[in-house]
Amino acid sequence: MSNPCTCALELLGMLVGAVAWFCSLSTTLMSQWMTLSTELLAAESYEKGLWETCVVQDVGGMECRPYDTLLGLPQDIKLARIFMCISDAIGLLGFFVTIPGISQVKCCTSHEARWAKRATKITGGVMYVLAGILGLIPVSYVAHNTVLQYFDQKLPDVIPRWEFGDALFIGWSAGFLHIVAGLLLFASCLDSTRSEPRFLYNHRRHELRTTDTSAKKHSEYV
Image (cartoon, rainbow, N blue to C red; front, side):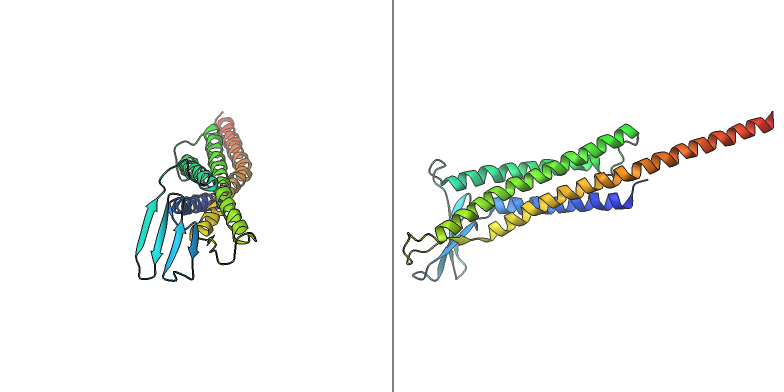
């Protein structure tokens, strides 16, 4: 019988991992990595993402334009594209790898199969943690460059500066949630490891008790 605490940790880890992946995918596709607004054009603001730049008007209009060339992109945008795509792929793979390892999937019940399910959960947890780290790297790198450019004393004060966009905060949340999902899966493996020796002990005790009862019945019959 499955431990309720283990089942809760597994389901919570899967749920947090799914939310983290959707946040990571949204971060990859959003154009609000950096925002810029000027006093000269107060009715317009600019947004820069990994795939396009957009002009947003206060009246509700929005016009986006994809980047013309890949070679002419800034280095931080190139690295962010690579890291975010890899993070999304590993996070999705970790979700599907974890599914056969949870206790609710009754695919096998032998002792060796339980260890295989535990190894599957550990693999999924490692993928979640790796996806979180790979997602935090580009978001933090872009934020670092934005801060350096914002406080650059060489630029005149009249020149507008790029600021943090919503995608950076969602990306940070996605990275931390991926790591939390991996830790929850690790915790479920530790909890199931503690409960397994007790299960084996009770199972062997039941077998010994059954053997003693059979021996007594056989002696009484003789």
